[in-house]
Amino acid sequence: MNPGIKIAVAGLAREGNTFAGGVGTIDDFRTNSFLQGDEVLEVGRLNDSLAGALQVASERGVAVVPTFHARSISGPSVRAEDHAELKRLVLDGLTAVLPEVDGIYLRLHGAFTAEGCDDVEGDLMASLRQIVGPDFPISGSFDLHTHGTATMAAATPMIAGFQTYPHIDMVQTGRRAMAMLIDAIQGRTRPTIGFRKIPVMSASEVHNTTTGPVSEVMIRLHHIQSLPGVLDASIFCTQPWLDVTDFGWSVVVVTDGDQPRAQGYADELAASLFDRRERLVVHKESLADALARARDAKGIGGPVVLGDGADSPSAGSTGDSSVLLQAVLDEPIGGPVLCSVTDAPALQACVEAGTGAKTTVKVGGTLSPHFFSPIEITGTVVSFGDNSSAPDGRPISTGRFAVLRIGEVSLVISELATSMTDDRLYRAAGLDVDGAWMVQAKSAGQYHEGYEHIGSELIDVDMRGPAQHDLLSLPFSRIPRPIWPFDPDVERGF
Ligand SMILES: [Zn+2]
Image (spheres, rainbow, N blue to C red):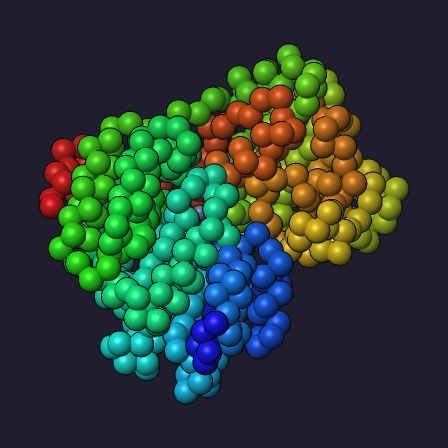
C-alpha cells in the first residue's frame, strides 16, 4: 500500500524528580526496559504509546525499523555520563538506519532530567535534528506530564501528548503521533506547531481530565483537534517535582501549514488554563482521618485505599516512606492491611532470616533521608517473590521482594522502587487485596484508575515526601519567577 516507506522507531522514557534522594543511573533502565533492534517490538504487546504507533504503521502498510528503546521508573536526575550513554545509544541506533528510512518516530516521556540537563528530550531532539537536517520528518509521543520546552517545539512540529489523567490513552497517543508522521511523509500534510508556555504549576492530583479545570479545557482542545486543518493538540501539565529553570505548563497545537492558526489555538488553550489557576489547588485528608475511615469501613465492599502520593515511585519518589506504616502499627485498623516499602538491605535481612522466621529489621528512610526516617519493626517472614511473580501479564520491575507480617499488616519489602498505581505488586506477592481493610497505594492520582474497581473508598492522604502535593513547602530554587502558585499576582504574560 505504501511501497518503500520505512520509519525508524526509538524510545527513551523516564520522568525526573529532583527532590528524590540519590542519583539515577543507566541500571535503572537495564532493570526495567532496555531493548535493541527487534527486541523493541516487544513493547508492542504492552499498553504503551509505542504499541499504538506500531499498530498504525501496520494498518497503513508502513515498515518499521526498530532501533533502541530504554525506559525506567521515575526517579532522581540521571548521572551525566549515563545520560550521555543513553543519548548515544538512541542517536547511534537511528543514525545507523537513517539511509534506509523516511522518518523517525520517538517514544518519549517528556520530563527526563539528568545532571546538567533539565530537558533531556529537548536536547535529544535538537541533536537528532542536527543529524538528519531541517526537513526530515520526526514525530514523538509524550506524557501529559511533559516538561514542554521551546527546544522540543523547535526540533519538530509533530508532538502528541497523552490527553488523559489518570493516563488511559497511551496507545491512542502513539497512534496519533505515527499517523501524523505517515501523513507528513506521504506529503498529505505540512505540520506546523504553535507552542505556548504558561506560568503555572500544580501538583498532579488536579491534572484530572475527567473532572475539574483541566477537563474543562480538554473539551475545548478536543473540539479544536476535530477542526479541518488541525492535526493534533496537547496540554502538558508538567511533572511538578522538577526544580528546573524553564518550568511551567505548556500547550502544543499542530496544524497543516498554518502556524499563526496553530499559535492562536495554543494561546487560547493556554489562557484558559491560566485563568483557572486558582482552582488548581489540591485538598487532601489528614492521615488520622483517613485511617479512621478505614477502621470504620471494616473492609465492607472492598478495601479503603489510601493514596500516599508524596512517596509515589511513579512520580519519582523512592518508595521508602514508612510514615503510614508506622501509623497503622501504632493504632491498628482492626483487619488486614497491605503496605509497601522499598528497602534492599531490609529485603536482604528477610532473605537471610528465611521463610517462617521472626525477624527484626529497620525499614525505610534511607533513600530520601531528608523526608523519611527508618523505623524498626518485628515480624514474620511469610514469602518471597521477584519480577517473575507478576500476575496476569502485568509486568513488575521491582526485583526481589519479601512479605513480612507484622500483626494485621502485610508489608511488601522490595528491592527496587516500582509503580504502585495498581495492585499488581500485592497480587504478585500473593496477598488478598480484595479482602484487605486498608491498602496503601504510593501514588498521587494514577491509582484512582488502578483501584477504582477494587476499593470501597479511595482517599488522597496529606503526606510529605519528594512527590508531595504541597509544592510551596518544597525547596524549589531554580524555577522561573513569577509563577503560580508561588507568586499569587503573576500575570499571564502572553
Ligand atoms: Zn504522567
